[in-house]
Length: 165
Image 1 (cartoon, rainbow, N blue to C red):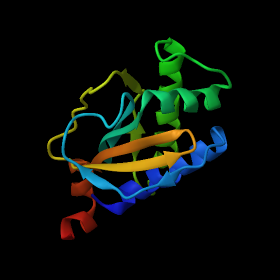
Image 2: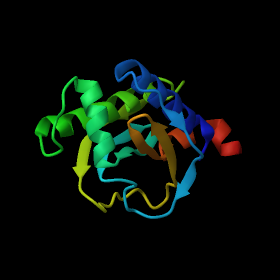
Image 3: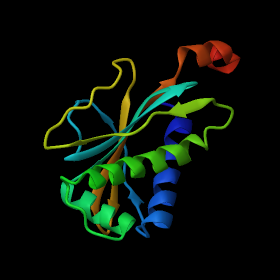
Image 4: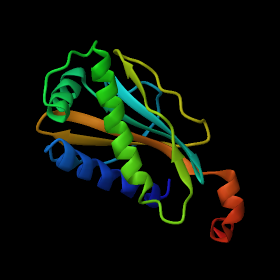
């Protein structure tokens, strides 16, 4: 996967968490994810379409998610509250939206977020798209951002540089 698709998400998660939650994020070494099981118990998922297609997942241990949501909302919310799921969805929406804005010369749309809560849930990605998992650390706990995106076939055909590569 091209670094131009990863760097915006790294910058975005640091920006969003620092400004909106007042929680700095340390980025750790990325790996290629080979299984479908989510990294943690709570996952916010956004789809991407247009010149770039695929999905982005923010995955948190439940305790970390609850601490981050409390920082974001200014109050504790139990994980079974609809407001908790909305807050997780909004976090992944802000991170993805900010990253989307960094995709220069790309027409990209993001979907409404989905949130899955529960141990050992699976997230399927396109079989032709590698998934990069970037572990992150905060004072509230660890999380992962999982990026499984690629340039769409129509964008590849329209871009002479991608054909030459």
